[in-house]
Image: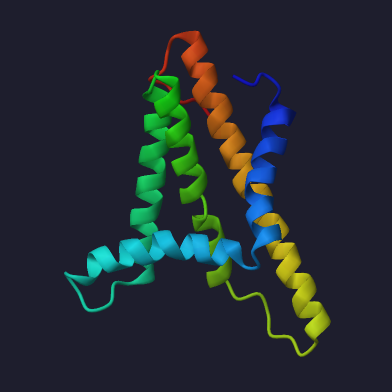
Length: 150
């Protein structure tokens, strides 16, 4: 277990930055995998499921994974769940994509906004993942793995 919060944050920042550096718009594709899968599952019950339903199911799955991470004691499974949580945190990208920022005529200002949103998304996801990691391992050390305090 890594005991320094800053080290954990840097590792998780790299986890989200590296795919975006090597593959342009990697966040869009990775978040589309989860959203598209959930949407396809619900397509059998309705012609086109609403985005709200997809986001609610996505958030419920993410919360369930976080609670499972806190409760699991076996380290290999715990880190596998942490990777799933990191993957499911791409909900942040989809939520930021839904919010219209503004219409712009300037290509340069649109590019700046794109990078600001990308950096904000990476920071949010890394901070949340660091918090989950820290709380999950802290509750395990205390011997009280069933509590998740805020």
